Length: 284
Image 1 (cartoon, one colour):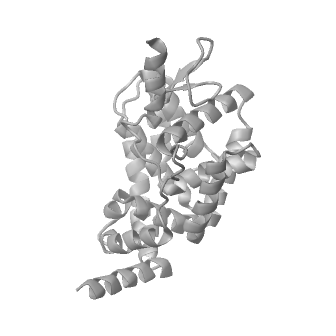
Image 2 (tube, helix red, strand yellow):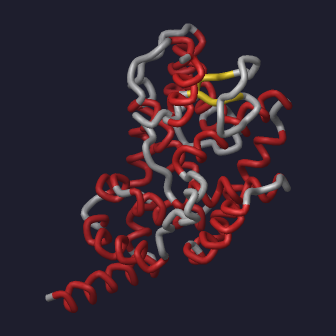
């Protein structure tokens, strides 16, 4: 009964074996709970972009990939050809942080990610039917339909997954993608709600070290006073799920007053709006 329950928790994405495998089959296996960010109740879908970055990391690690993973990587490189260079950049950036981890932490991350994608992008079923990939044309159609809404305000743009992807690519071209990434991480932190104080502060410390500490690898422009207040709360274990909101809103206003208007004038966005108008006329 215990094995059946453990397998069910694994199949639904709440636990993972440290030595990764699709079956929880040994009493000697070390089992860990997934970090809350990966729980299906919080993260219940995986974009093609995220899956492409994960598979690209496997390729960079030169690990033996399953046939279906190799096939998926090939399909995604074609479906996402219009932003494949950015996929590769994201994978390479993640690998730089990965190489700085201890061997144990690398093993945990490998097992954790493998289990997560096993749940959300499982192998083909026994009859050999491969999982359906989102085609490039469908993505463009979705973006064209949503594009007019993105011009109504930054909040509408950020509320759309495809909008965040396109805006992120634009910010990357201006070497300021860290602003959007910081906003997204703060949003995730808030949406997880109140939880164990030590865990919250540990998660906030990761965000702080990545974006807010002086000379951070992806430092954002947040006033020193805000940084100091947040650091004191982290150190004193007095953080709440909304304590990153002030800094997040500061970066939001920075994007709203600066890069958002340039994004709306970019050739890529203008072309998308024109495609949306053409689609509307055809369907009229």
